[in-house]
Image: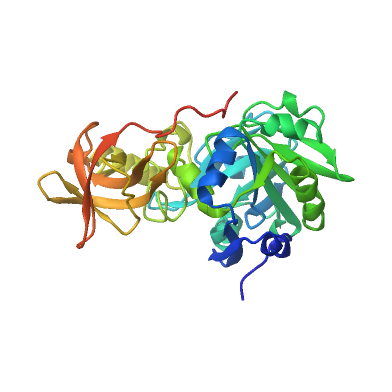
Length: 362
């Protein structure tokens, strides 16, 4: 039986098309359709129900030292009320999950993890922390609502005075709907964006309060995927997995090789031997969109890799894709072919991200 977020009935009342996502019954799109939802995010403001995501609290004198070994990014010395993106690796250098680390106090941390990996992440963390470190899975008590778009700050300022002071990858506590909530500014669409963490039973009040502004549109996981592909953000199970390393995925900047962490020896070995494949971004010559099950071929038909994410991009008016290619075929500007046994299309390898006009850091 699928899990439900606290807003499940609300999504149905709004006419959302519901689909299974990581064991959760989630809205993929609303009646206005994905193109209008895309327009709302890129030009105005949209709200996503992301309450399926996982949240862990880790606290204790030894918590910082243990997290430093678990997460690829260095978290030592992080200022309180700041966030940092990183990954947890296995011994072979594959990604157990990607996550965001929040420093709540000197000795208290919150990790935000992917819904599909909550149980796996819990096991992995408990395996690597000292007995004195306290671990709390607060996923089923914590709702998460993402408010994204160039007008998101302007809209939220009416509800959360002081939010204009939040810098990129920082957070603070605010009073909202009679509750103390955490609001961060990270984003996953390429636009200015905020995440509201509130008690599970408060989610409806928060949702209603934000949507009371007519400029805000409810948006689903369908357009969220389009937006994150345009911004070339990874999605676990596509660009990242237990068998894909952050080096292959082009995420080396989120790996601090100057410290020790689980999986580092495997990454060092990969660096010495050279990457057999690398992640590339490509644009179709027309509106035809690549799909995750498609293969990638050289211009003369030699199979060279696999598509891991693809969509039609309303921002570019073309099909766009992300895939892994054998290293010798990854040159920028190189012509490739994507498709299956029935249909193929031409494309060109381009720099990331696809969408560069966003309001993310404004």
